[in-house]
Image: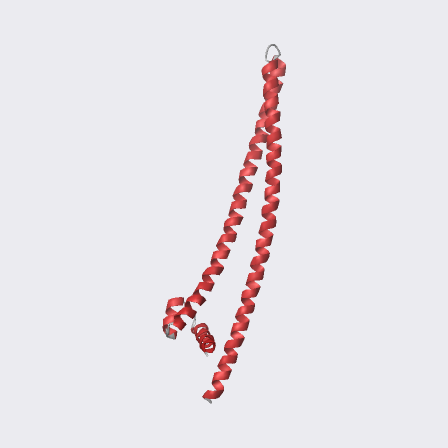
Length: 169
């Protein structure tokens, strides 16, 4: 009966490895799609920021022109001076609004990038548990030691031990 149990356990371990590999492949594919989507969003955001900066430059130039005209016409044209002051205020409001939008878009872009980094770190941390468990098995650690060191359930440690022993043979 024990001779029959070994192939069954090996087959079970093999299927667990296949299932685990399939799950990791799916997670990797999803993460790749999310990164691709975030990259598209970042590119679109960068394009939008560039357009806003161009608009901001145009507004700055317009503002400089208005200020220059205001200084030239100050000599005796009080009505023109009031109209120019209103135009300047309008341009300043537009300029400030554009600056706020640019800052908000930069913050959003930074948050997206930080989100990608944290997802990559989470995936790497999960793989480190399995690598550490495999290394401990190589050093002859017991199942209980591996479970406590790597915070893995009994079934996963048994599967890892089985795979480790199969590779040694």
